[in-house]
Image 1 (cartoon, helix red, strand yellow):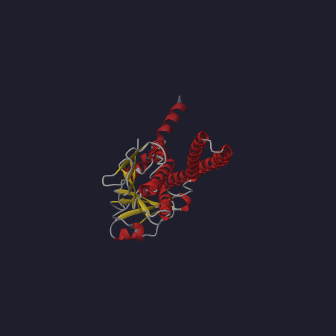
Image 2 (spheres, one colour):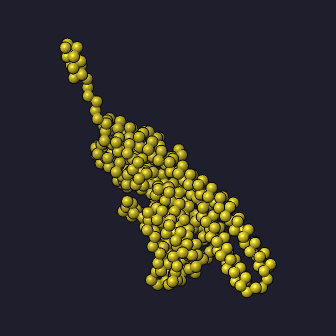
Image 3 (cartoon, helix red, strand yellow):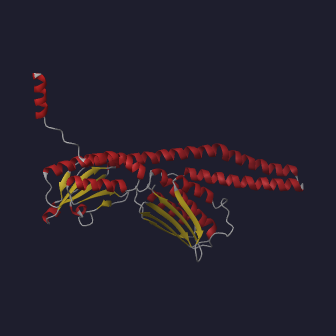
Length: 362
């Protein structure tokens, strides 16, 4: 009995362990939410949690802008606090008050976050007064945890792009080494057969049909090989689009304009290549069939997804346009369906064609 009482008294005197802060659960769930939802919504939700946990006014995340200089900003408190322009930026894991802002009576804390490939991101938190010790300690914990998530997610995206490139490269080699070579052989045999059979009318018609079919099939397989070889090759969607537009501009007389307002990490890696392929197919159709002079390519985020549009001022679509054939419409629709997007293709009032891709987050 006495030992039981002693153990009870000792247990009562033991300090209770505090429950972990709510922001830690939000950070633990962040990788899964980034994979499921994509875009910036999961990061914005975490920033809102951090503001509550730290009793701060605002929080802003500054991410490296792809391969270009500058920052991509998420959240509030950055526009009126350009600390990155006048402050010595902290290293990953470090937390520091912006001295220039402090001299103006403003309390902005910069936290260095580790990002992919040695690049750095920043968390900027605004307070109404000088942050207390517990707030700065929590910021150090947040900077470490958030930096680990950002670094792991960026590395995962890079690996996914590399895997997709490898898969498509393998498909291209298999098509080239098997189907394309056999079709080339059949074309040669058809030409020799034509010489053997002479001028018999029926044989001529059959051979002409065979030659035409094989020629079309061979061209389609070559296009599939070319499409399969197209990869992101470690590039962002922005870089791949710019390279594609430059390529079409070199090989045609059209004047292209690209207006891309999508953030570099706004789409899942699996969707980026499909979007690029759809845009390239639309541009190929413009160059081959439209007789256009001006071509506009626009990409922009919407409230819960994104839209892509390719417009030209050419002759427009034929009235009896089939759903397949040399315009590649069926393949474009299949690519759109693969990422859960809607594809609209129509002639514009006043001439020209508009290809529109709409994606809404489930």
